[in-house]
Image (cartoon, rainbow, N blue to C red; front, top):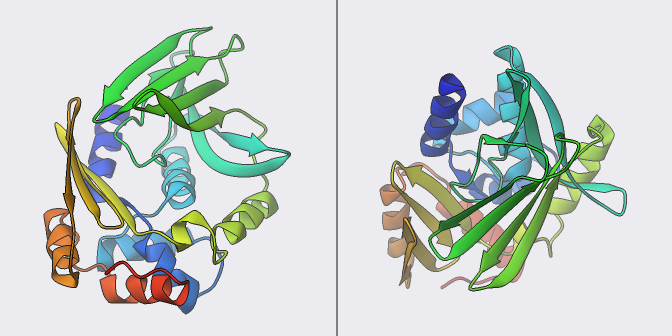
Length: 247
């Protein structure tokens, strides 16, 4: 458990949640999921990480290689797989892990019958409720009292074809990560994040926001995120081609 905790915290600092790699990939490669080798190359060459599919699917591969007992699960809507996350068993207890929600609320959190875990990070409240089967869980995310997202962690495990179909849809021109620019990293007790022109800092329940006004502001933000090699111009070009002009 100590090793898993240290691994996840290190991952959140070194491998950011971001969609620049996805925006660049759309034009350079196509609507496909990164291979593990491509994922590692993106980390080493540009300081990339990815969104929920890249983060959780490749983490799953890594943890499996390291010998953890785990299951790939996630959010299913109308029979379609829309978000992956992981259930890990340690000493007979299942734990929820999810690196794909652009937050430091990643786990591991125990999945114990009907247990509820509630945490506030910045301006958002996270409520994870375990199911009676102790294998599935439900995460609700609130901002100023309003639920903005709900993510399930349940089976069955998706097939490669179901994953490919889900990833393909995330590259559609109107999809969320084809019309926004996002990044997030955790630096110990605080985290830094970017959502389009809003650069924010969360520490405890404090949420501070700075509005970016120029390309140079974006360059400086990625320096603060320790991501100086990311392909900002290429990512912005994809957004522009999709009808989004950030500045």
